[in-house]
Length: 67
Image (cartoon, rainbow, N blue to C red; front, side, top):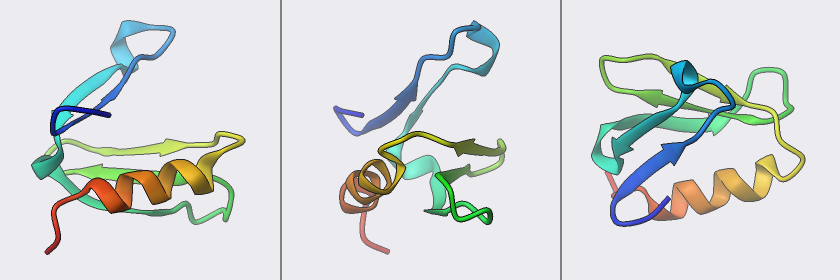
C-alpha cells in the first residue's frame, strides 16, 4: 500500500491488483475469523489468510479515507 493505492502482487498475475484506496468499499475480518477481506467497488471481494492478517487489516483501516 502506498501513494493512495492498495496493491497485491500474486504468484500468478491473474489474481494481482492495484486500486485507488477510494475504491475500497469495505475491509474487515474474514468470516472464518482467520484473515481479512477487502471489497472493491464494482469488482469483487479479495480474502487474505496471512499470519499477520490482523496487523495488515489495521494498517489498511487506518489508511482508508474516513467515511
